[in-house]
Length: 356
Image (cartoon, rainbow, N blue to C red; front, side, top):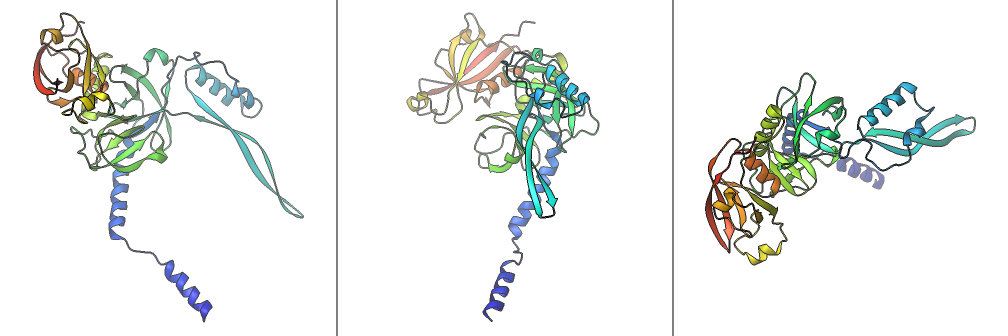
Protein backbone atom coordinates (compact mmCIF):
# COMPACT_ATOMS: atom_id res chain seq x y z
CA UNK A 1 0.00 0.00 0.00
CA UNK A 2 2.83 2.36 0.90
CA UNK A 3 4.62 1.51 -2.38
CA UNK A 4 1.46 2.22 -4.40
CA UNK A 5 1.00 5.52 -2.60
CA UNK A 6 4.58 6.55 -3.48
CA UNK A 7 3.98 5.69 -7.14
CA UNK A 8 0.81 7.78 -7.21
CA UNK A 9 2.58 10.69 -5.51
CA UNK A 10 5.41 10.64 -8.05
CA UNK A 11 2.92 10.42 -10.92
CA UNK A 12 1.01 13.42 -9.64
CA UNK A 13 4.27 15.39 -9.20
CA UNK A 14 5.14 14.80 -12.85
CA UNK A 15 1.85 16.13 -14.19
CA UNK A 16 2.37 19.22 -16.41
CA UNK A 17 1.42 22.48 -14.72
CA UNK A 18 -0.66 25.07 -16.54
CA UNK A 19 0.79 28.56 -16.13
CA UNK A 20 -1.13 30.75 -18.58
CA UNK A 21 0.79 33.97 -17.96
CA UNK A 22 4.21 32.34 -18.38
CA UNK A 23 3.00 30.40 -21.41
CA UNK A 24 1.81 33.63 -23.04
CA UNK A 25 5.10 35.32 -22.15
CA UNK A 26 6.94 32.40 -23.72
CA UNK A 27 4.92 32.72 -26.96
CA UNK A 28 5.46 36.48 -27.10
CA UNK A 29 9.19 36.13 -26.44
CA UNK A 30 9.54 33.56 -29.21
CA UNK A 31 7.63 35.79 -31.61
CA UNK A 32 9.85 38.77 -30.72
CA UNK A 33 13.05 36.76 -31.15
CA UNK A 34 12.04 35.23 -34.49
CA UNK A 35 11.09 38.70 -35.74
CA UNK A 36 14.46 40.31 -35.05
CA UNK A 37 16.95 37.40 -35.18
CA UNK A 38 17.26 37.35 -39.03
CA UNK A 39 18.35 41.02 -38.91
CA UNK A 40 21.15 40.53 -36.36
CA UNK A 41 24.59 39.26 -37.34
CA UNK A 42 27.88 38.60 -35.57
CA UNK A 43 31.13 39.67 -37.20
CA UNK A 44 34.86 39.61 -36.69
CA UNK A 45 36.44 43.04 -37.05
CA UNK A 46 40.24 43.27 -36.98
CA UNK A 47 41.55 45.50 -34.20
CA UNK A 48 45.14 45.58 -35.45
CA UNK A 49 46.84 45.41 -38.80
CA UNK A 50 47.51 41.87 -40.02
CA UNK A 51 51.05 41.03 -39.00
CA UNK A 52 51.12 43.51 -36.10
CA UNK A 53 50.34 40.83 -33.53
CA UNK A 54 53.26 39.73 -31.33
CA UNK A 55 54.94 36.53 -32.50
CA UNK A 56 53.53 33.39 -30.96
CA UNK A 57 53.61 29.65 -31.47
CA UNK A 58 52.07 28.86 -34.83
CA UNK A 59 49.12 26.68 -33.90
CA UNK A 60 48.62 25.89 -37.58
CA UNK A 61 51.73 23.76 -37.40
CA UNK A 62 49.71 21.43 -35.17
CA UNK A 63 47.35 20.83 -38.10
CA UNK A 64 50.01 19.51 -40.48
CA UNK A 65 49.09 16.01 -41.65
CA UNK A 66 45.83 16.24 -39.66
CA UNK A 67 43.59 17.89 -42.28
CA UNK A 68 43.47 18.16 -46.07
CA UNK A 69 46.22 20.35 -47.52
CA UNK A 70 43.65 22.45 -49.40
CA UNK A 71 41.77 23.27 -46.19
CA UNK A 72 44.99 24.14 -44.35
CA UNK A 73 46.05 26.42 -47.22
CA UNK A 74 42.68 28.18 -47.02
CA UNK A 75 43.15 28.79 -43.28
CA UNK A 76 46.59 30.27 -43.92
CA UNK A 77 45.19 32.47 -46.69
CA UNK A 78 42.39 33.73 -44.47
CA UNK A 79 44.78 34.50 -41.62
CA UNK A 80 47.02 36.47 -43.99
CA UNK A 81 43.92 38.46 -44.98
CA UNK A 82 43.35 39.47 -41.37
CA UNK A 83 40.73 36.93 -40.25
CA UNK A 84 41.17 35.76 -36.68
CA UNK A 85 40.74 32.18 -35.56
CA UNK A 86 40.63 30.65 -32.11
CA UNK A 87 42.38 27.32 -31.59
CA UNK A 88 41.17 25.18 -28.70
CA UNK A 89 43.16 22.07 -27.76
CA UNK A 90 41.12 19.46 -25.95
CA UNK A 91 40.54 15.73 -25.82
CA UNK A 92 38.46 13.48 -28.00
CA UNK A 93 37.09 10.32 -26.39
CA UNK A 94 36.42 7.09 -28.24
CA UNK A 95 34.57 4.00 -26.96
CA UNK A 96 35.73 0.58 -28.12
CA UNK A 97 33.86 -2.72 -27.74
CA UNK A 98 35.88 -5.76 -26.72
CA UNK A 99 35.11 -9.31 -25.69
CA UNK A 100 35.43 -8.24 -22.07
CA UNK A 101 33.29 -5.14 -22.34
CA UNK A 102 33.87 -1.54 -23.43
CA UNK A 103 37.03 0.52 -23.09
CA UNK A 104 37.67 4.17 -23.76
CA UNK A 105 40.66 5.98 -25.18
CA UNK A 106 41.39 9.67 -25.46
CA UNK A 107 43.56 11.59 -27.88
CA UNK A 108 44.31 15.28 -28.40
CA UNK A 109 41.90 17.17 -30.62
CA UNK A 110 42.21 20.66 -32.08
CA UNK A 111 39.08 22.72 -32.76
CA UNK A 112 39.49 25.80 -34.96
CA UNK A 113 36.73 28.41 -34.98
CA UNK A 114 36.30 32.00 -36.10
CA UNK A 115 36.46 34.46 -33.22
CA UNK A 116 33.51 36.86 -33.52
CA UNK A 117 33.94 40.05 -31.52
CA UNK A 118 31.12 42.37 -32.63
CA UNK A 119 27.39 42.37 -33.31
CA UNK A 120 25.57 44.28 -36.03
CA UNK A 121 22.16 44.99 -37.53
CA UNK A 122 21.13 44.82 -41.19
CA UNK A 123 19.48 48.15 -42.00
CA UNK A 124 18.52 48.01 -45.70
CA UNK A 125 17.93 45.76 -48.69
CA UNK A 126 21.43 46.52 -50.00
CA UNK A 127 22.97 44.53 -47.16
CA UNK A 128 24.38 47.45 -45.19
CA UNK A 129 25.09 46.57 -41.57
CA UNK A 130 25.64 48.98 -38.67
CA UNK A 131 28.29 47.61 -36.30
CA UNK A 132 28.77 49.57 -33.04
CA UNK A 133 32.55 49.12 -33.06
CA UNK A 134 35.23 51.11 -34.85
CA UNK A 135 37.80 49.54 -37.10
CA UNK A 136 40.20 51.40 -39.36
CA UNK A 137 39.44 50.35 -42.95
CA UNK A 138 43.18 50.40 -43.58
CA UNK A 139 43.45 47.45 -41.20
CA UNK A 140 41.07 45.33 -43.28
CA UNK A 141 42.90 43.67 -46.11
CA UNK A 142 40.38 40.97 -46.86
CA UNK A 143 36.89 39.69 -46.33
CA UNK A 144 35.16 40.28 -43.00
CA UNK A 145 33.49 37.05 -41.83
CA UNK A 146 29.82 37.40 -40.89
CA UNK A 147 27.74 34.71 -39.23
CA UNK A 148 24.02 34.87 -39.96
CA UNK A 149 21.20 34.02 -37.59
CA UNK A 150 20.88 30.51 -39.05
CA UNK A 151 24.57 29.77 -38.44
CA UNK A 152 25.65 30.15 -42.05
CA UNK A 153 28.78 32.14 -42.87
CA UNK A 154 28.61 35.16 -45.18
CA UNK A 155 31.25 37.48 -46.57
CA UNK A 156 31.25 41.16 -45.69
CA UNK A 157 33.32 44.15 -46.70
CA UNK A 158 33.96 47.36 -44.81
CA UNK A 159 32.24 50.29 -46.53
CA UNK A 160 33.54 52.99 -44.17
CA UNK A 161 33.81 53.79 -40.47
CA UNK A 162 33.63 56.78 -38.14
CA UNK A 163 36.00 56.98 -35.21
CA UNK A 164 34.07 59.62 -33.25
CA UNK A 165 30.87 57.59 -33.02
CA UNK A 166 32.80 54.30 -33.08
CA UNK A 167 30.64 52.91 -35.90
CA UNK A 168 31.59 50.69 -38.83
CA UNK A 169 29.38 50.04 -41.85
CA UNK A 170 29.65 46.67 -43.58
CA UNK A 171 28.03 45.39 -46.75
CA UNK A 172 26.92 41.78 -47.11
CA UNK A 173 26.44 40.26 -50.55
CA UNK A 174 23.55 37.84 -50.06
CA UNK A 175 19.95 37.47 -51.22
CA UNK A 176 16.96 37.28 -48.91
CA UNK A 177 18.22 39.64 -46.22
CA UNK A 178 15.89 40.92 -43.51
CA UNK A 179 16.49 44.61 -42.66
CA UNK A 180 15.51 45.64 -39.15
CA UNK A 181 13.09 48.42 -38.28
CA UNK A 182 14.93 51.16 -36.38
CA UNK A 183 13.11 52.90 -33.56
CA UNK A 184 12.97 56.70 -33.59
CA UNK A 185 12.81 56.89 -29.79
CA UNK A 186 14.72 55.52 -26.83
CA UNK A 187 13.08 52.96 -24.53
CA UNK A 188 11.36 54.44 -21.50
CA UNK A 189 13.00 53.63 -18.15
CA UNK A 190 11.54 50.42 -16.77
CA UNK A 191 10.55 49.05 -20.19
CA UNK A 192 10.99 45.38 -21.03
CA UNK A 193 13.59 44.98 -23.78
CA UNK A 194 15.40 42.12 -25.47
CA UNK A 195 19.19 42.48 -25.14
CA UNK A 196 20.95 40.50 -27.88
CA UNK A 197 24.62 39.88 -27.11
CA UNK A 198 27.74 39.08 -29.13
CA UNK A 199 27.55 35.80 -27.23
CA UNK A 200 24.17 34.36 -28.31
CA UNK A 201 23.86 32.44 -25.04
CA UNK A 202 23.83 35.78 -23.15
CA UNK A 203 20.74 37.09 -25.00
CA UNK A 204 18.03 37.91 -22.46
CA UNK A 205 14.89 39.83 -21.58
CA UNK A 206 15.64 42.63 -19.12
CA UNK A 207 14.32 45.85 -17.63
CA UNK A 208 15.72 48.93 -19.33
CA UNK A 209 17.52 51.39 -17.05
CA UNK A 210 19.27 53.62 -19.65
CA UNK A 211 22.15 51.25 -20.31
CA UNK A 212 23.15 47.60 -20.57
CA UNK A 213 26.43 45.87 -19.84
CA UNK A 214 28.63 44.43 -22.57
CA UNK A 215 28.19 44.79 -26.32
CA UNK A 216 24.77 44.18 -27.78
CA UNK A 217 21.65 45.25 -29.60
CA UNK A 218 18.65 46.51 -27.61
CA UNK A 219 15.26 45.50 -29.05
CA UNK A 220 11.90 47.01 -28.10
CA UNK A 221 8.88 44.75 -27.61
CA UNK A 222 7.53 45.84 -31.01
CA UNK A 223 10.59 44.25 -32.67
CA UNK A 224 12.32 47.52 -33.59
CA UNK A 225 15.97 48.22 -32.78
CA UNK A 226 16.24 50.81 -30.01
CA UNK A 227 20.03 51.07 -30.25
CA UNK A 228 23.34 49.60 -29.21
CA UNK A 229 24.87 49.00 -25.79
CA UNK A 230 28.62 49.42 -25.54
CA UNK A 231 30.19 48.64 -22.17
CA UNK A 232 27.78 50.78 -20.19
CA UNK A 233 27.07 53.34 -22.92
CA UNK A 234 23.99 53.43 -25.15
CA UNK A 235 23.84 54.76 -28.70
CA UNK A 236 20.24 55.13 -29.97
CA UNK A 237 19.47 53.71 -33.41
CA UNK A 238 18.01 57.04 -34.53
CA UNK A 239 21.38 58.70 -33.81
CA UNK A 240 23.16 56.15 -36.01
CA UNK A 241 21.11 56.87 -39.12
CA UNK A 242 22.76 60.18 -40.18
CA UNK A 243 26.18 58.63 -39.68
CA UNK A 244 25.27 55.50 -41.65
CA UNK A 245 23.77 57.51 -44.50
CA UNK A 246 26.84 59.72 -44.84
CA UNK A 247 29.27 56.82 -44.66
CA UNK A 248 27.39 54.90 -47.36
CA UNK A 249 27.01 57.97 -49.59
CA UNK A 250 30.45 59.56 -49.29
CA UNK A 251 32.64 57.29 -47.13
CA UNK A 252 33.06 59.92 -44.40
CA UNK A 253 31.09 62.01 -41.93
CA UNK A 254 30.96 65.78 -42.13
CA UNK A 255 30.12 67.70 -39.00
CA UNK A 256 29.59 71.41 -38.48
CA UNK A 257 32.29 72.93 -36.28
CA UNK A 258 31.51 73.75 -32.64
CA UNK A 259 35.04 74.06 -31.29
CA UNK A 260 35.10 72.34 -27.89
CA UNK A 261 37.01 69.52 -26.26
CA UNK A 262 34.68 67.37 -24.15
CA UNK A 263 34.80 64.42 -21.75
CA UNK A 264 32.01 62.31 -20.33
CA UNK A 265 30.97 63.03 -16.73
CA UNK A 266 30.95 59.51 -15.28
CA UNK A 267 28.30 58.36 -12.81
CA UNK A 268 30.81 58.43 -9.92
CA UNK A 269 32.46 61.72 -10.91
CA UNK A 270 32.88 64.14 -7.94
CA UNK A 271 31.27 66.79 -10.15
CA UNK A 272 27.95 65.09 -9.53
CA UNK A 273 28.37 65.53 -5.80
CA UNK A 274 29.38 69.17 -6.19
CA UNK A 275 26.46 69.88 -8.56
CA UNK A 276 23.30 68.62 -6.89
CA UNK A 277 21.13 69.69 -9.84
CA UNK A 278 23.11 67.40 -12.14
CA UNK A 279 22.20 64.19 -10.34
CA UNK A 280 22.52 61.27 -12.75
CA UNK A 281 21.62 63.32 -15.84
CA UNK A 282 24.02 62.36 -18.67
CA UNK A 283 26.50 65.20 -19.23
CA UNK A 284 29.69 66.19 -21.03
CA UNK A 285 32.19 68.56 -19.46
CA UNK A 286 33.90 71.16 -21.66
CA UNK A 287 37.64 70.87 -21.06
CA UNK A 288 38.90 73.18 -23.79
CA UNK A 289 37.59 75.76 -26.27
CA UNK A 290 39.14 76.48 -29.66
CA UNK A 291 40.02 80.18 -30.03
CA UNK A 292 37.77 82.16 -32.42
CA UNK A 293 35.41 79.17 -32.71
CA UNK A 294 31.58 79.20 -32.61
CA UNK A 295 31.83 77.95 -29.01
CA UNK A 296 34.03 80.87 -27.94
CA UNK A 297 31.86 83.41 -29.75
CA UNK A 298 28.76 81.98 -28.02
CA UNK A 299 30.35 82.48 -24.61
CA UNK A 300 30.81 78.84 -23.65
CA UNK A 301 33.34 78.32 -20.87
CA UNK A 302 35.70 75.62 -19.71
CA UNK A 303 33.87 73.71 -16.96
CA UNK A 304 30.43 74.12 -18.52
CA UNK A 305 28.56 70.80 -18.72
CA UNK A 306 26.58 70.08 -21.87
CA UNK A 307 23.24 68.36 -21.20
CA UNK A 308 21.50 68.54 -24.59
CA UNK A 309 21.93 69.68 -28.20
CA UNK A 310 18.81 70.97 -29.95
CA UNK A 311 16.69 69.29 -27.32
CA UNK A 312 18.39 65.89 -27.59
CA UNK A 313 20.24 64.56 -24.55
CA UNK A 314 23.91 63.74 -25.12
CA UNK A 315 25.23 61.27 -22.60
CA UNK A 316 28.68 60.41 -23.93
CA UNK A 317 31.10 61.52 -26.62
CA UNK A 318 29.77 59.00 -29.15
CA UNK A 319 26.21 60.29 -28.74
CA UNK A 320 27.42 63.87 -29.06
CA UNK A 321 29.38 63.06 -32.22
CA UNK A 322 26.26 61.42 -33.67
CA UNK A 323 24.11 64.42 -32.74
CA UNK A 324 26.55 66.80 -34.43
CA UNK A 325 26.60 64.54 -37.51
CA UNK A 326 22.81 64.88 -37.74
CA UNK A 327 23.42 68.62 -38.35
CA UNK A 328 25.66 67.95 -41.36
CA UNK A 329 25.50 70.76 -43.89
CA UNK A 330 23.92 73.04 -41.35
CA UNK A 331 25.29 76.46 -40.48
CA UNK A 332 23.54 78.84 -38.14
CA UNK A 333 21.95 78.56 -34.73
CA UNK A 334 21.88 75.43 -32.62
CA UNK A 335 20.78 75.37 -29.01
CA UNK A 336 22.88 73.89 -26.22
CA UNK A 337 21.52 73.26 -22.77
CA UNK A 338 24.36 73.56 -20.28
CA UNK A 339 24.86 73.46 -16.54
CA UNK A 340 27.02 76.33 -15.28
CA UNK A 341 27.66 76.91 -11.59
CA UNK A 342 24.54 74.98 -10.65
CA UNK A 343 22.29 76.79 -13.13
CA UNK A 344 20.78 75.25 -16.26
CA UNK A 345 20.88 77.75 -19.12
CA UNK A 346 20.34 77.71 -22.89
CA UNK A 347 23.12 78.94 -25.16
CA UNK A 348 22.61 79.59 -28.87
CA UNK A 349 25.64 78.71 -30.98
CA UNK A 350 26.09 79.69 -34.64
CA UNK A 351 27.64 76.55 -36.05
CA UNK A 352 30.39 76.83 -38.63
CA UNK A 353 30.19 74.63 -41.75
CA UNK A 354 32.80 71.89 -41.87
CA UNK A 355 35.73 72.50 -44.20
CA UNK A 356 35.72 70.19 -47.22
